[in-house]
Length: 471
Image 1 (tube, helix red, strand yellow):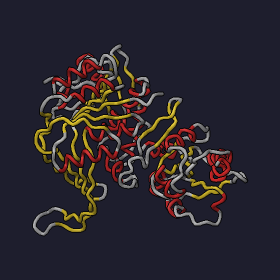
Image 2: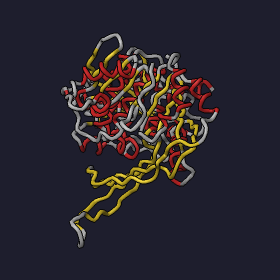
Image 3: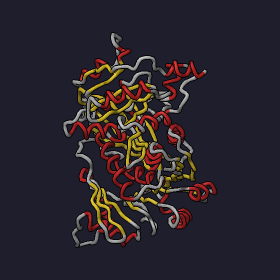
Image 4: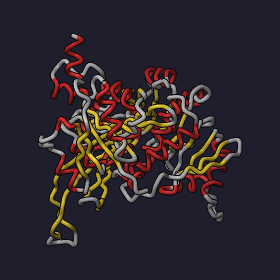
C-alpha cells in the first residue's frame, strides 16, 4: 500500500491547557483558587487534524491562515515538530487561542481569545500546487472562513473529480463542495444542517441519507459518540459501524481523530467502508486514552520527539501506522473481554532466530502481544552512533510480519515505563538474560497487578554478534 500524500485545509488555532490543583476557595468569591502545575500548548483545529494525520503514515501538508504573532509561531513550531508541511495563508487578527482550565481530570473553564482568523489576501501558488499533488484532501472546518474562500472552493471542486475529498463541517462554516467522497458531521452538526422550523429531526441514518442528497456527496457519515457511525452512500446503502467499546473519557479532538484517520486511509488507497471502520476504532481509542490532552501531554515523549508512542497495528491484511492511543485501545478491548495482554520490549535492530523464539513464547502467554520498540534516537543513546542499522519504521514492519506480534509501539525514552503505564499489560516479558537484574519497570508493572515473566533464550544469537561478524 502506498504511503499517500494528504493535504489538510482549514482553520488552525492554538490549543492551550492550564493544569493545576485546588484546595481552597477565593476569599472574595465562591470560586476555586487553582495552583498551576503546568501549561501545555499545541496546534488545534485543523492543526490538530494535520498532526494526527501525520501519525497515520501519510505525508501531510496543511493549508491554513497563520498570524504573525507569538501564538502563530507556536502553531508553526508544533506543526514542524510533527513533520507537517505548511502553506500559510494571510490571517485577520491575532491567532485564535482556546485555553482549557483543568483541575485534575475536570475542565472547569475555557477561555477563547484572538481571531477572527479569516483568510486574507490571494490564494498562494503553493496552495494550488499542494492540492494538485494530493492523493487525498481533508477539509477541517472550524468556522473561521477558510472553507468559504471562493478560489479555494473552486480548486477543491476541481480536485474532487480525481481524489477523495473528506469534509469535516462546522455549523458556522460553508457547506461541503459537491462531489466530496465523504462528509463527517457529528449528530449535532448533522441535525443543524437539516433543521427545518416545526419539523422534528429524523434519526441519524435518515439524516445521513438526506445530507448525501443535500450536499451532493458520495457518502456522509454521522458520528453518534459511543454508538459509532451511521454511513450513508449515494447509492442508497446505509451502514452502521459500531464503536469497538463504550469508554468514558475526554472526547476533545475525537472528531479530528476520526476524520484524519479516515482521510489518511483513503489517501493510501483503502476502501471507504474499511477507512470508516478504522476511523471509528481510532476515535474510540482516542477517547479512552484521554483525548487531546493525553495525546499531547501524556505520552511521555521527549520534547521534539513526535514519534514516541506511535503505534503500528496489523489491519485489513496490511500494516497501518496509527496514533499513540491505538495500541492502548486494542489492549483495552482485550481486557474488556477478559483476555490477557502481554508486552515485551527491545531494539530488534537485526531480527534473528532468538528474537523469533522469544516473541513466540511471549505471545503464548496471553491473547495479545504488544512490542515496545526503542526509537532510532533511543537506540543511538543506548547502543552508540552506529546503531540502529534499520529505521524504527522498518523494524516495526519486520516485527509485524511475525504472526506472534499484534502491535508495535515506538517509545523515545531509554526505558519504556511511560508507554507501559498507558497499556498496562498483564504480563511484561523479558529475556532470561535479565535474570537477577533489577528491571526499573518491574515495580510499575506490579503496581496494577501485572507480573514479570522471563523468556528462554536461544544460545549464541545476538544482534551485536551478528553485526560484528558481518563487519
